[in-house]
Image (tube, rainbow, N blue to C red):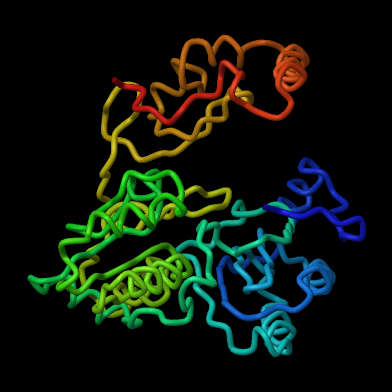
Amino acid sequence: MAHQHPHFLKNRLNKEQALEKLAAESFTRKTFSFYRYVEIKDPIETRNKLFTEWETLGCLGRIYVAKEGINAQMNVPEPVWDEFVASLYAWPEFKDVPFKHAVEDPTEAFWKLTLKIKDKVVADGLNDDTFNASDVGQHLSALEFHKKLEEPDVVCVDMRNFYESEVGHFEGAITPDCATFREELPMVKDQLKNQKDKEVLLYCTGGIRCEKASSYLRHHGFKKVSQLHGGIIEYAHQIKNLGLESKFKGKNYVFDGRTAERITEDVLSNCHQCGVPCDTHVNCSNLACNLLFIQCGDCANIHHGSCTTDCESMALLPLEKQREIRAGFKKKDPMSLGKNPFRRPRVNLSK
C-alpha cells in the first residue's frame, strides 16, 4: 500500500507539458532497472532526498521505497549518467548496486519521476517474520541458466504474471495462470510439491521477485532452488553477446510506456478478439474499464481500441460525458469498483 505524506516533493509538469519537454530533448536516455533488499530506516526522508537528486538530473521513472529496500525502473539522460551513478553509489545502502539495462533505449518509457513509499518493494503477501528472507537460492549467470535448461531433471518456473508470460517465456517453462505475485507463490509451491527432489530454476524480469520466491520455496522444503541473476533483461544481453540462440522466446513485458521489448521474433500469443497471432498489449480505450488485453491492429481499428461493444460505446462518447458517467460509478460505490459495469475479471475475449 502506498502512503501519502504532506511533505512529499512532487512533479511540477502535467503530462502534456512533460511530453513536450521530452520531444524537445537533444540527448538520448539510458533506460534501466535496479533493486536491492536493504534496511532503509527512514523511507520518507530517503524518498525525498532521492527525488531531489534525481529531479535535478532530469531522471524519469517509477521507484518504490520501503523499509526493506528499493525497486526502481527509470531512465537517465546520457550526459549525466556518471553523475547519477556517483550520487547513487554515495548512499551506503545502494553502493555498487547492479543495473539491468533495457534491451532497447526508447524515450517513451517514462514521462515523469515518481517515487512512492510502499510497505514492500514487491507485493508478496508474505509475513517475512515466519522465515529467513535472506536464505535465497543459488544465483546463476545467463550462461549457467542457459545450460541448466538443457539438463533433464530440472523444472523451470516463470515467476511473473500471466499477462507477462503469455507474450514471452523460456522454452518448456511452467507459466502459472496468476494475476499477481502474491497468488503465484502458494500456487507454485503446491504445483511443485511432488518435485522437491528436482532442481527448480526460477526467473523473472530483473530478478527481484525470484529473491523472495527462492527463499519462500527453500523455507517450504525445496533444497535445490536456483534463480536467474539479473532476470530476463540480463539474460538477453549476455546471450546476445555470447552469440547463442536465446531460449527465451517472444517479448519481455516491462512496466513502463513501452509495455514490452522484443527478445526474439517469435509471436507466442493471439489477439484476444479475433485469435490471429499477435503479442501487442493495449489498455481498453474506455478509461472506466482500462482492461489490459492483446489486440491486433485490425481489431483496434474495428473496435476503436476497446475490448467489448459496451466499452466501445462508452469510449466513443464525448470526454465530458465519460467523466460524468465515471463520477457516477464512484458516487454510487466510492469504496469499491465492484459495481462498475465496465470492471470485469480477466477473460479471453475470443471465447
